[in-house]
Length: 250
Image (cartoon, rainbow, N blue to C red; front, side, top):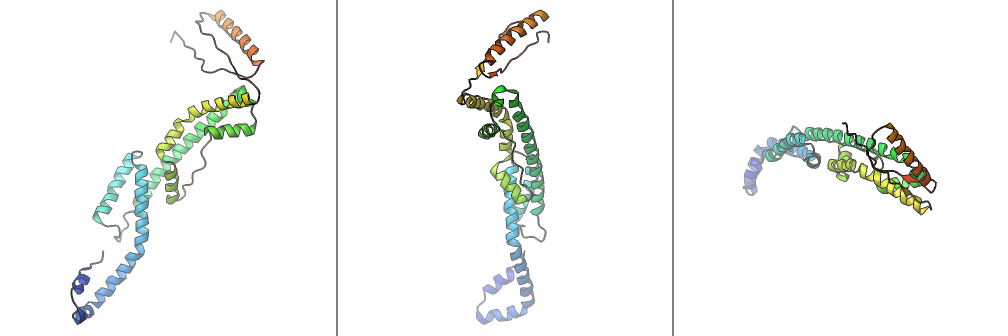
């Protein structure tokens, strides 16, 4: 930072008393003035980088602890030491490291969410209820339940990355991933409602419980349920949900 002691000393003088020291120190004053103008040109850029670093740091806190702690200490040193306008830019490297870590974490979460949503989207096709709906109904149900792959990330610049994270932080992305299973169940429920509204009634068939002791018992059980399911499906689609089989020998 420029030394302002000379100006402080001159400000204590009045009128002609200032002329001699001003003339004597003219070269120094011109040099310092050029330096102040240079720093003035840096100010907006450095302050913008500082504000961006603070925003990215907030998004990394509690999510990328190691990165946030390490880079946070560097930013604190810059702030406490009032070195934002030093010849060396201490902030841009911190912005770059924070952005790289956040961009990587966000990309991984987006990819995982997309894969999970794609897999969940494929499963309703196994249900007759879903197949009775048209493509437009499919799109509407998926949109209503939120069971859609996320849109492509726009993180080409650090500012764009900040906007993405402001709209949905890393914790929110994790919550979206955790919600996929619940949304998949909602898809089937909404599909069922849509089919009912269209005049078809969805049938629920109770699967009987019991212990099967040998192969003959298995065949008898399958035959009994086959008759029950075929009878029910003649009157409309059937949903079978949550059948569990326990192996007592395990």
